[in-house]
Image 1: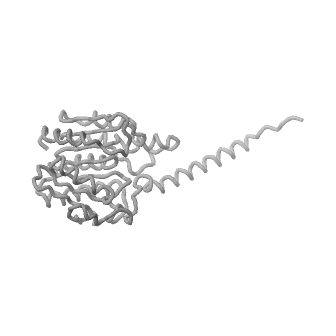
Image 2: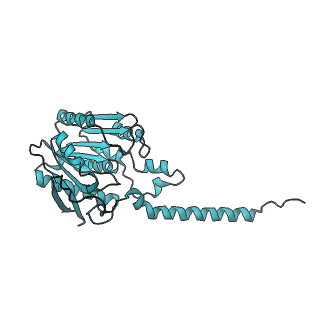
Amino acid sequence: MAMRLPTRKFWLGLVRRLALYYLLILLAMTFIERWLVYPAPSADEGDWAPPHLEFEEATFTSADGTPLHGWFFKHEKARRSVLYLHGNGVHVADIGDRMPVISRHLQADVLVFDYRGYGKSGGKPIEPGVIEDGLAASAWLAERTGAPASRQVLIGRSIGAGVAVAMAERQGAGCVVAQCAFARLTDPAAKMFPWLPVRLLMRNQFPSVERIQNYHGPYFGCHGTDDTLVPFEQGEQLFRAAPTEQKEFLAYEGMGHNEPLPREYWQRLAAFLEEVGA
């Protein structure tokens, strides 16, 4: 008995159903983009009053009135002011212990703060708002220390590097320090979801490789060769795009995305900042 092959009507119906399912997936991904890009930990997690740390509570508002919160670490003989822009999976209470180390190695006053939607800051994160949050933090730091925005050292880790580059494009910086940085946020996202048109759909694109063209100050980058979240090539690409001769890039063999940087890194960064007068 001969088998009946599927009809043209069957194949058209199948294609329509698959297209509908794909469109539904695209719609769902646009709804959860904020959660994927900004997986902010709960403010209930972490120690917000660690007795072993000496810091000043910093409260200020972003351009649209969003309340922001951070910790300020004062150095008695500060040579520079540092604004630390953290990655997307932590808040201030998670990384407060690192700030005295940075302050000591760089002989710097340090402000670390939370973007909107993180920690004790209000609002919900989105690229334009997060950048405005960084600018507001820079203004607070300038008022507190007397160091103008154009002289501040911006240390950005992962998505924080994207914020740092955007800030430097708009108001300059004493130095941009990029750790585990991407060239564009859409690049690692496209690698993670190759079956989605993320470059067309994403609202949070952080095109750092284009923005860095408008910043001509010192640049100091580093990246681990085993970074599976933001590939090593991304950090290299952003470094090459920086239009300045005052730049340096450190490659760490076998290091992943979230591993702590060695002590030698901070020593080399301190020397670089002295060399460029940051």
